[in-house]
Each structure stands twice: as structure tokens, then as C-alpha cells.
Image (cartoon, rainbow, N blue to C red; front, top):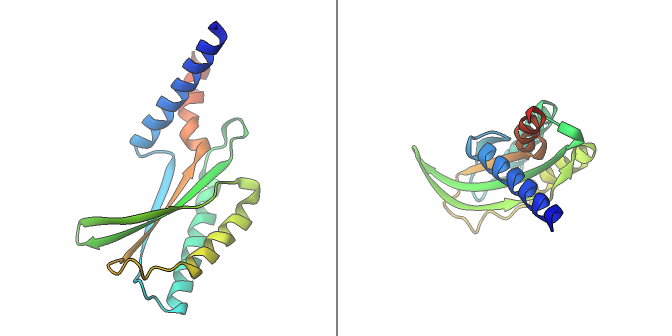
Length: 147
């Protein structure tokens, strides 16, 4: 019983630390691109290429404490009217490990190329969020090491 309580308490501390890290705007990267729902092939390919380049540039700067090198990419859709942002939806993509990053980023590129955005007629911003599990959990592991 005591062992289960310690396990529960440990997992609770991990969850609280991860939530605090994300709430402090750490552990993830984000970038946006101007798009339209009916984007032609070449401009869409330029955006997909830019997203691919950005993801490849971000990965080397992520932490991998204790070998945790897992990532999650989410595509966010919004309508920006000056400083006012209207959320239109999001699309979480499958989690991937650093060793499979090349294939995963190529799949993200292909997804952007084939995504149907016509259901969001006011779409004008594609947001890409890269969540690094290692960066989210690093503050917890650092605090545990000091205990």
C-alpha cells in the first residue's frame, strides 16, 4: 500500500511539474505562417518546406534528460485580425522519437501538402507547435537531483 502511495505521489509531482513548465511557456516551440484555405500547390509547398526546415532547426536545441527524446507536433489553425486571434482548431500529429525524426518530419510535410483547409474559410494562419517531452520533464529531474 505504501509503495502504491509513493508511486502515485511521484507521478503527481511529475504531472504538476510538467504542467508548470508548459504554463511558463517552456518546453515547446511555436511558429506561424500565413496561409489561405485555397492555397495553390507552389505556395503550399513553400510553407511545408519552411515548416520542415524549422522543425529540423529546432530539434538539436531540445533537451534529452535520461534519454527522453520524444516529441509531439500539433498544427493549429487560426484567423488573425490584427492582434485578435480566433481559434479555428488543431490537429495533433503522432508522437515521434528523435531517432525517427527525419521520417516523422517528412510525414508532417506530406500532411501539410494534402490537408483540406477548405472547411475553415476564414483560415489565415497555420501555427506549428513542437512539444519536447525532454524539455518539459527536465525541470522535474533537475529538482529531483537537488533533493
